[in-house]
Amino acid sequence: MFSFFKKSPPSTVSYSDLAVDMHSHLMPGIDDGSTDVDNSLELIKGFGRSGV
Image (cartoon, rainbow, N blue to C red; front, top):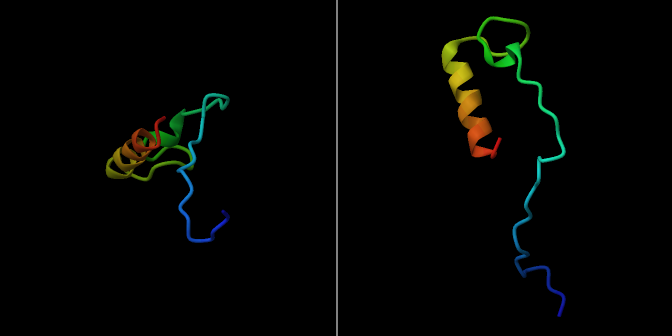
């Protein structure tokens, strides 16, 4: 039976078809990426949590 209150299973996202260019955006103070080392570390941790 259809219900608006029924929880649907969590969806999964596959990044396997994406090409990621991680050049200077993780290096602080270069290009338009991270502004400092702490910001770089947070970005890297976020990538890890996302499965990258």
